[in-house]
Amino acid sequence: MTFYDREAELEALETAYESGEAGYFVVYGRRRIGKTALLKEFCRERPHIYFLAAQESEQRQREKFVEQIAAHVDERPPRISGWEDALTYLAEKLQEKRLIVVIDEFPYLVAENESLPSYFQSFIDEQLSGTDSMLVLCGSSVSTMESEILGQESPLHGRRTGQIDLQPFSFGDARAVISYEFEDAVQSYSVTGGTAMYLTQFDYDRSLAENIKQEILSPTAMLYNEPAFLLRTELRSPARYLSILEAIATGHTTPNEIAGATGVGSGPLSKYLQTLRRLRLITRETPVTASTKQSKRSQYVVADEFLRFWFRFVEPNRSSIEEAPEMVYGGTIAPRLADHAAKTFEDICQEAVWEAIRQGELAPYADIGRWWYGEQEIDIVGLAPSDDRILFGECKWTTEPVGHGLVDSLTQKAADVRWGPANRTESFALFSRSGFVDGLADDIGENWSLFGPEELGALL
Image (cartoon, rainbow, N blue to C red; front, side, top):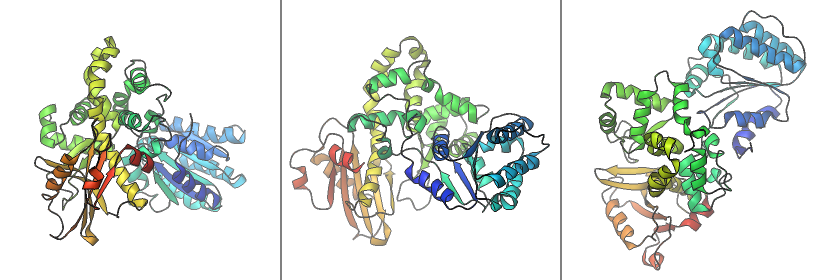
């Protein structure tokens, strides 16, 4: 598989390695995000030992770890009786040769022995520190990595020389993979999102329709059962979580709406939502102007575009897909794909705002997000409290050019946003899939910015 981007992350790892001193790095992030690909690219031309942990007994995992070390130095594995012996054996080899040692899915080891971080603490303090080698602990269980490895209560706290919380590809980064023109690229990204595994499943020499039919709607395709498999990997009883994710993906975003759609009581629902947030499968949003993160106006959204697509179009239609996938695509997905992509387009426009700020096309803002109150909603609001400056933006994924109606509508809604003093400085931005009507740019003031497909394509 081709390795894409991740230049900043690779540079961080390479800088730590090139320092010539002992290094202990932590790499973590959600499943399928590309952690293993990143580490294998980093190790590719450097002497290394790569060990992938599995859900096996502690003794068998320890044996495999020692066998991996012995295979690298071409000798028979010694008999060891515990992790202390295994790490002492590793330390002996690090005295002989500079190595990168990667332990992937480290949480599987911790699950079998909660004392393991203490053994690694001793190894780092007493044995690794006297070498020029590098230890990398990697894991997909974000909660375990943050509590057992990075947390203040962990024996390993404060010992790392660096860490990477690997995130999905932004739309701008994903353009290195998606070779479609801008409009199809947005719709394709609304299907795969920025998760590396999903993004690279598509063959971009084929049409988007063919990719969806072959890579998602085929019962033999990897992506067909991926979300269910993902939840079974993370959770013992995934059924309730599946129904909650489907409810959120289909527009039930408040706790009351989710409870009504799933039949799950508010008490248990709170715990389910907390778990899904911990797994980074959903996020909790509040209006960007809310004075507290505990705002009662919070909404939940599925945090991954592919999961949002799957729970909206695949999970409810599995029986039909088994019998007639072509009909599901033509009758259910194709007519609604633009509506699905509209939400993704809003997120891409937020990304474009940050990029426009970096490039100096827009003034800087400290916080950018959505705003809503009652039935009123604004897609993008940017806040600059130190300057009493606010940005209002609307995003339209329509087949018709945007005209004066949207200008008037946004101006009216902006007056309802309670933030800052009465003499605040207001700026406006419009984002459009199909550009703008002739003459609009001449009719609006200098505090308005217009971003059509060409401008967005150039920014991203």
